[in-house]
Length: 191
Figure 1: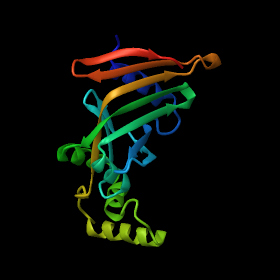
Figure 2 (figure 1 turned 180 degrees about the vertical axis):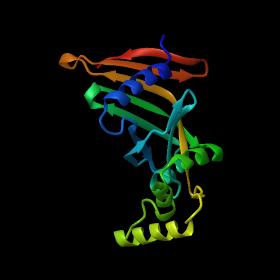
Figure 3 (figure 1 turned 135 degrees about the vertical axis):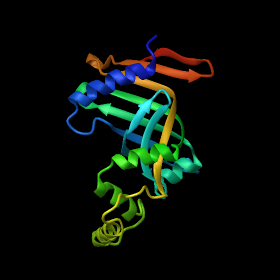
Figure 4 (figure 1 turned 120 degrees about the horizontal axis):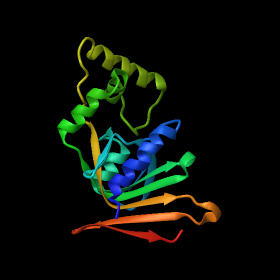
């Protein structure tokens, strides 16, 4: 049996070479306390056997939903490769050191934007947001921009990973990996 993270690494490496834009883009599905779903695109910023990492404003909708319902699903769809990967599992915050290290790699404007944005909240005008951006720029002029206390990352620890490969005549190949207390098992699903 091939381990699911090795297969993910193989497919992801190929996607990084062939996908024109954002090979690390993934749909993130969450649900609120009432079970109402919501989905949006986010960017994968780290991955390995310990999970899949993305970052966000912890005062926004996705973080609120993940706090009350700490389970989510990810979907990578690489149309040009005719492949997709579905990942499901529990979600928790990354530690401060991990979030700080990633935040330091962002462009200065992205760092300032994290301070200026009240993510997912109503915005009366674009001018207000840009004024807040300029205020943050002036506040941190001449020095590094620290990570805001309301900005960090989540790690999804998978218990289910499905690899889907398009085949002619809709005779697709679906490989399913599931994890339990003893490790990973692999099987196939009908298309």
